[in-house]
Structure formats: C-alpha cells, structure tokens
Length: 327
Ligand SMILES: [Mn+2]
Image 1 (cartoon, rainbow, N blue to C red):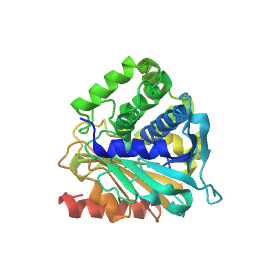
Image 2 (image 1 turned 135 degrees about the horizontal axis):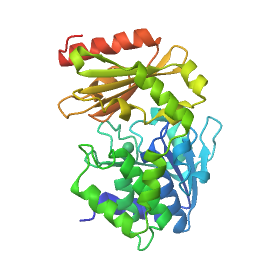
Image 3 (image 1 turned 120 degrees about the horizontal axis):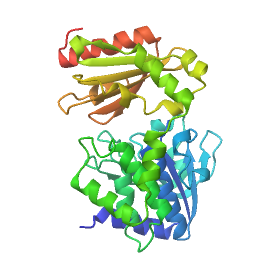
Image 4 (image 1 turned 60 degrees about the vertical axis):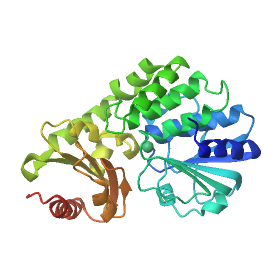
C-alpha cells in the first residue's frame, strides 16, 4: 500500500543533485535518527547530501553512526541545495533563528508527524498517525531495494523507540511494530540502542535528575506533577540543556497524575516549558499553542519569556481555564 506522495518524494530525490536535510532545534531521538537515516540513505543512492541542525547532537545519540556528519545550521549558512528536506519540523520557526526557507533549497519537502504542521513545503508528507517521523522516513527509504543498512536501521529504530516512548505512547500502532520488526531484521541493534539511551546515564546527569525529582511538587489536587531546573543547576552539575531533553519522562511516572510539567531556565528570563499528559483526554497541545509553542496532543512545549515563578503562574492559570481544575 504505497502512498502516492512517497513515490513523488522518491522521484524528486532521484532528479536532484545536491540535497540538504534539516531538523529542529534542541533535537530529540526522532530528529537525529530520522536526519541521519535519510542522510545515509540518500548518500547511498549517490547524491551530495548535507545534514544540518541548529543545535549540537545531544551526547546520548552520539553513538549512532552518521551523527558526525551533522553540521551546524546558523545564519551564515548560504548553500542553496536543489532540494531541502525538513524533518520532524512542524514549523520553520523551530529552526530557532531567522532563516529564509528558499535560501536553503530551491524546492522544499516537509516530512513530519506533528498535527500542527504548517504545511510550508512544496511537498508536504505529514502524517499525524505516525508514532514518529522515523516511520515516514522508513516508508520513503524502503522504496529503494536493499537501501537500509544496519547503520540506517539503527538510526530509524532510535527515532521510533524514542518518539513512541519505547512503544508505549498512544501513537504506537500495529504498523510501528511491523516497521520495528523489519528494522531488526535489517540489523538494528536494539540492545545497544536501549542501553545507550535508557540504561546508562553519566553520574552528573543522574544527580541533576535527582535534584529535579527532589524539587517536584504535586498541584491541582494531585493531577499535576511539576518541577524545574534553573541555570545554576545546569551549571552546578555540568549538564547541557540539550542533554536534559528526556527528563520529563521521570516526572511522568508519578502515580495518579494526569499531567507532568518541567520548567527549564534556558536563559535568564526565558523558560522552556515541556508538557506531557498521561491520557488522551488531557490534551496539552492547545496550552502550548497559547504561548506560541506546539507539538502533539499528549506531548508539547513552549517557551515563555518570564522568570520561573511567573512562567509557572501563567501556565497554571491556563491549565485552570482549560481543564477547570482547581489549584
Ligand atoms: Mn517526532
């Protein structure tokens, strides 16, 4: 059951010479895995390819082959590719700086699974039913025979396992498992991937997680768990903001809660808010959107320009209004 749009993307790639691939700021496993899988794949069919990211690759994903090919995208970037493919990026503003789309590529292909994707591409392959953009990249790369090497399989498996919450979130489907099974048959090393991403943490990272957990509080009669990390804490433990992307999963384990919130101070007066709900009735995307952010129905984020205390107050007010919960 091949989709027409997938075939169209294949044709476009085959006709191009130089292709750039880009994913969003503060990259997660789906962004990195999808980016390098697509990059290694396109390289194998003999195209010139650039892999770009506005931020560095978080330490935890550096074991993946291909991450060393990722270059930093900044305002000085001035190479215009034949095609620029945006990966896992709902809105070009998620590149973090003012970059003109058309200066990156003559033709834009947008591949994503966010429901709020802005459809800014010349081709938009957006499927919110997919657990991860990795699933969509798999669909594209599968059109070429024997293209998926063990390295590509590792990258795609990482994208899928991280964005599906190890095959546990609502978006995990029968298809997700079929794809993962096929990736294992193509050489994905699930043992190493799970170990590197979930079982091993540097000691300083563990200490920061501990600090975040010890500061955690319940609110709204136990429906919400929240905590925060200040700039000082990041500094004290020597942890980079980029290496704290997955921390919310630990708060979300609290029994009985509907919503977990993590406030991280990314700069003085600028707070990154990450939201994750535990059931599909508690939709968080709209809350993030109110503050100029976005994401998925059950996992979203936004950035609030305020200090920690006011950011929390603003967000709690919006929760009270949206769900009718009483603080
Ligand atoms: Mn994703």
